[in-house]
Image (cartoon, rainbow, N blue to C red):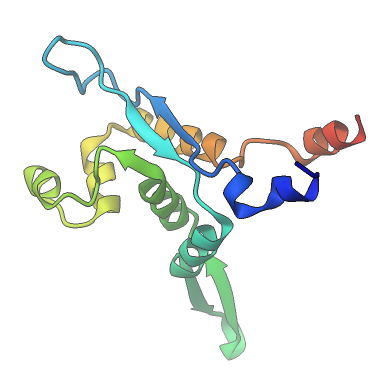
Length: 140
């Protein structure tokens, strides 16, 4: 395979899914913690999420400033990345008394668990890598 062919869509590994125990509180019938499945999202998906988390803020003098709401953005990236459990499942949402995947995550996880999930989602999606580290890798 030529170097260029490695970039063809059919030759790229695109199903990046990692299993990760978000919480010890969710256990199977044998008492073992149930791992969640987290996938990497594409930049196309990320762009849509960024747009959905963007708001226009009026400033003094009538100027408008466009800002991304970080909490909304991270919640949307997390829900787009979680494959299992199915956060869009109506029965699961109903069991927690919420509607919507983002609200479900915030209701079902403790604060520290939510932070751990966000950290893992960022790692799976490559947001945890420092640009300087990447530059060093490219140089070598």
